[in-house]
Picture (cartoon, rainbow, N blue to C red):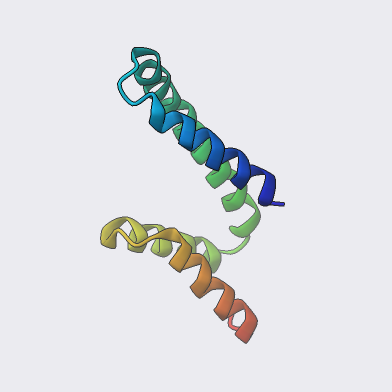
Length: 91
């Protein structure tokens, strides 16, 4: 599932680095910031709608978001902890 995207990102990243100083690259990069933020917000909303069925899960989502934002923790660590808790039957 992730393989084609990773391969695509790898090759695009290499090409992207070659044109560090190009004006068109800076323009595209500036334009992609709001697009990326919009996609991230939409993904967050979809996940929150599915996961936030009870007040406990909403509280857990908010606590996780605050923890991640406050401590600047990589979200992958949060996903790993959630996976372990899910495997243990805690969630």
